[in-house]
Length: 285
Image: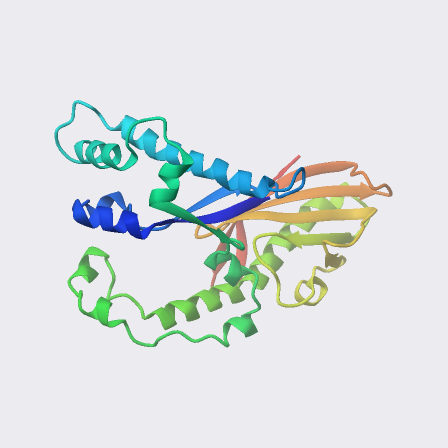
């Protein structure tokens, strides 16, 4: 399991950067997110503190790496600036924890969340309880000339409209999954006489139990948490969003905990006037 830390500049570093007029593209004044495999105080008291000290050394090494990669023959930006700034900032080797503590400090982060994962695993009814602005921000309005470069017809949509579009896309998870699972089970039915399928969807969560959302004639569908001994365990492992490429893994059980046959399925879905359809698919083996 990874531990996450925010690397922040100290007031001393911010003052130093301002005095030397360090260019913004170096981003030394901005926080950075670092991760490290977490051990904690499992083996001895203070082990967690040692981990953070080790991380500090890795941070120093990363800045030294950037310094050494800057060509010594260059007399123009950005290599010349990188050499000048980092050599003054870091000083002569060897670098120590004292160097780190002078310029940066670490802030432990409880966890790492993502917008995409939150939307994918939050019920639509919950998402609809959040509302975005219905007009473009003053900053966007003040830079109308940028619309053309972004190839946006009529300008960018307000964030509220983007949020609503994301919810509508989320509502299509069920119909798309229905199309995909029906196609897969039709191809796998010749491999087993059992008509029971335990389904697990990793990229997103359904808003209701699987047996209430999906209906495939002749099949009983359950959530992937069931201990299945006879039938098919089907896992949706990945979706290439935008391209509608869906990747499944299946395991067929014939009375034992260990699968008698396993393989993969790859589908390319497309939206038609009549709903979702499988444009192309393959089952291996």
